Every structure is written in structure tokens, then in C-alpha cells.
Amino acid sequence: MNCNNHTEVVAVATCNECNKGLCKECANIYTIPICTECNDRLKSQEKFSIYKSIGISIFCGILFWIFAPKLGLFMENGKELTLGIHLLQFYAGAGIIWGWNILTRITPSGWILSIYAWILLWIFKFFISMIIGMFVLPVVLCIYLYRYIKLSR
Ligand SMILES: [Zn+2]
Ligand SMILES: [Zn+2]
Image (tube, rainbow, N blue to C red; front, side, top):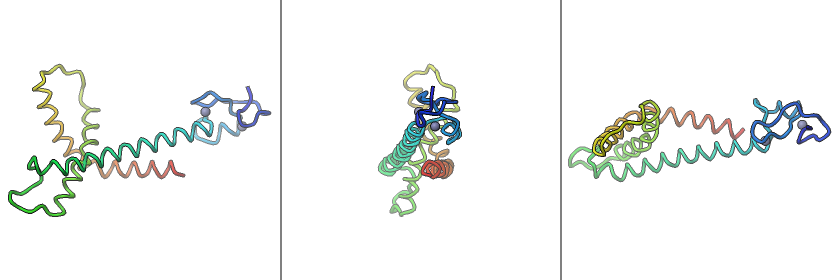
């Protein structure tokens, strides 16, 4: 088999994704042997997953910002909501998804519970997720920003 880009050169490796032949030069462009088309495709897929995660996070933030006052969360009775409280509600909501993901990863699955127990568990998980999320959100955003900058280079 010859290199897909240099048809006169013998391939020494194949693309990890599509098995196209790669010569020594082409196989060493990236850290793993992968062709340029597949590398571009993986990059844009990863970028898309970053957009999606941030989008979901913003959506959760807006949703929580709308519903938190109705649930009486982050409020002092009878007081006007300040801008800080509005931001806190949005921030807490935006973090829930990340806290939820972490909890899902570290808790064992396959529990057999009644529907009421599940609802209680979900409510409990929701609040724990919110607390975890408030700490994790800035870290996650930094990691995503770092990944995004690396992908854009
Ligand atoms: Zn490929
Ligand atoms: Zn080549």
C-alpha cells in the first residue's frame, strides 16, 4: 500500500480512523497516525461537543433563573431580587449539569427503587449537583477554554 497523499511513496502506517495509507512524513504530522481529513473531522466534532455542552449549561442556567424564584430558592422573603441574586441563580443553574454528570459517574447504577424513591433521589441529586456545580463550573469552563484554544490552533 502507498501513502494516500504521496502515491509514489510506500505507506508505513495507516490512519487510525479510516485506514488510509500514510507515509513516514504523513504519519508523523500529528501525535497519532491519522490523516488530515480525519483529524479535521475529529477536531470539528470535538468543537461541536464543546458548543453543545456550553449551550446546555447556559440553557440550564436560564431555566433555573426562571424557576428558582418560583421554588423560593436564593431569595430572601419580601426582598427585591438584586442583580447579584439573578446572577447567582443563573450561575447555580448553569453548574447543575456538571455536578449531575459527576454524581452520575461516581454513584453506582442499577438500583431497583420504587418511583417515589427515584423522585426523592432525583430531588436530592439535583440539590447536591447544584452545590457541586458551583465549585466545578469555573474549573470546567477553564478546561473547555483550554481545549478549544488547542483545537483552534
Ligand atoms: Zn483518515
Ligand atoms: Zn505521505
